[in-house]
Length: 480
Image 1: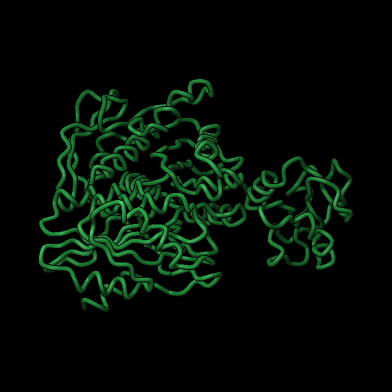
Image 2 (image 1 turned 90 degrees about the vertical axis):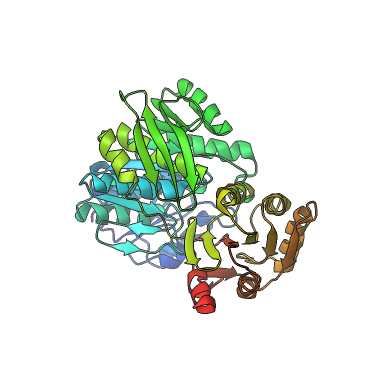
């Protein structure tokens, strides 16, 4: 690929029209002939590596200020320019897809997969990109340490290009707050953007709830239509503030008569039923959704609303909800014998409360909740997590969850402060496998064992090491 085809601004800045191999902002992945984009991060500034990258064969560097090397392109914002370069490198596949984004603290993965399911039930091909994996309508990749919830620009546009080659017409994607803050999605115009909720999480990255909210809000500056959960206080605030942005919007609610809303909700151990209603429809539609819990009323309602707003038939959207079979690691029953074992990704106080309150109505025995707090993540939420479990479970098993470079017992001690404010019986077991063995060993007939925090993940993170750890496999090994 020639430089001027990829980057017309190079001509304006007097750079020779050289051959380009690829684009990268990672010093470890540079190949001869690449454009190296200098990104300033929290602990490393790519501008400082510019001389070394040229010496190692970079065709040129892109920077926000003079790095002293040549050839060099100067731009106001290298993060945004990287997204533009990546899109151009792969032929702007985002313009060939109807893009639907989901943002919020909880529910992103489930909603993104429901959207994909509804669209495919209508006979269209829909890619899906997010925490639980990447489905490109014929090629499936597992998310791991190298592929975050919302991939980095070169990976993201590579996936979108592959989806287009595979015949995709739509793409449902999780938009994480970090990705939005880092402009990974810059330049994409979304047909629909869904806001699920906002609760305390990722403050280690954003610093405050204000910054966290503003990162999420940024998505709605680049969408044609917003679908907002107005039952959430931040959702209600966003819905009101979109007026000043001028973004078209619709609301959804399980409490009030919004643009899309539910009535007569009934919860069962393995499902939830309700009537799907819309101001745009002359009648309501009965729904039986195969995932339990009131939060899954929100999830299914928001996904169906987005698909209706995208032009799909409301009857088909509602019918598709009934055939959805869930997402790995999201309120997933993995053993149902004398007692029940459920794996869920809940790793915040709000998510823990939601999953515990989901299972409580149909729990005939005790609820045994195994959980932990992640290392190098918002430490302020740890006591709150403990207090939430203490108030909503019968027995708690506190353990480790991706400690990274922190001392696991220090993390456990901080969570215990919250547990100690309640009267719950609990046991702390640092080794997560041993903790699972203990939780299963004390389970009695009709008890529910909730394994929270890992969900779809099949690893534990110690320092920089990702060690294989799949709770699905472990439960099967222990219980046969």
